Amino acid sequence: MRPLSYDTCTAKDLTAPLAAAELDAEVPDGFSADPRAAVESLRKIKEFARQEDVVVLPSHDPRAAARLANSEIYRPTSGPEPSAG
Image (cartoon, rainbow, N blue to C red; front, top):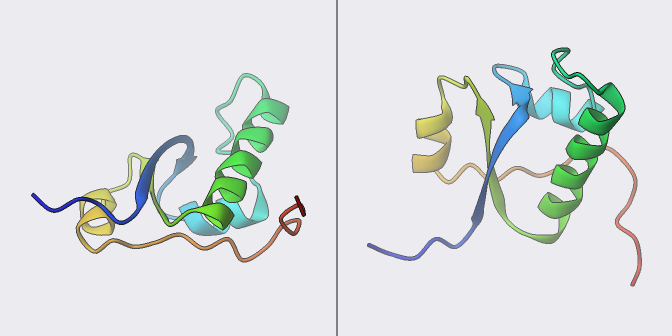
């Protein structure tokens, strides 16, 4: 088994099929008891994805196995710029 060259993120706060668009727009799935915490979770996923190669695997995503098999790296397309540090 070859080692992964990326991280994986199983994201309960995201649902298919609009996962990348929802994540980029910081739109929670609508089923969260705490919408503010859900948005913060999305922001943390995006920040992590700016720093590392990551395959995001949303809950209930029928394409999750294909995303993983194809090493579909998520790249945030919107949101605040990474902080300098």
